[in-house]
Image 1 (tube, helix red, strand yellow):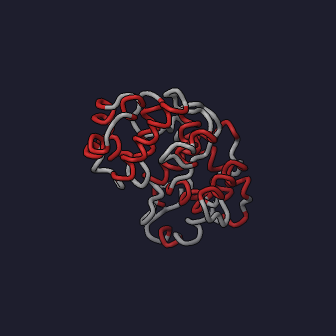
Image 2: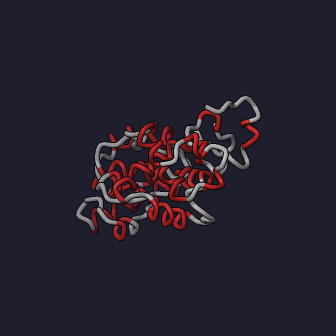
Image 3: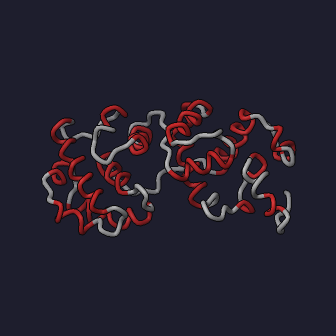
Length: 236
């Protein structure tokens, strides 16, 4: 693998394979236990939490789910709930009205078509109200330990900035490129690597390049963010 000294200053000469190798190696050393920050105890709870997390922070979701799970601890209990029973409990999350309908609809479908169990495959998961490809990928990878790359706004942004993806215009294109280049046994944790990196380091408005260990391999840093280097960022 190229060392930081070898690639620093000549990012443009790195191949995509070298970049992936560098990035994966760095994450394995610095974030070996990355996992979801959503709180849950079973597949049903994670499914609910991920549906709620769409365009909403995990921190906010974790604030509302304890009461929600206490009142509706299973798909069976949620399936019989009324809108006015659920919406007040999740009102502080984004798009609470739509998510209330999705949660109740999801629970009803689980009871009617899946014997109250969360499906373990993408095809069935995306049939559920409120469940798209991203949510389904989270469930199959986190709960069922299957290879999956869920692409949210953080993954989409970070993968493009680093240079792991090229001209990816949609989450699906990002997913396809990442899946093609990351070893299958690392896909699940790689999803968490990129999310957490985007959440705490590679922020949307002001990435903390001065704190980032991926600088030597990052296309964004070696182009748009070079001014940071001239502003008190010393090379190691």
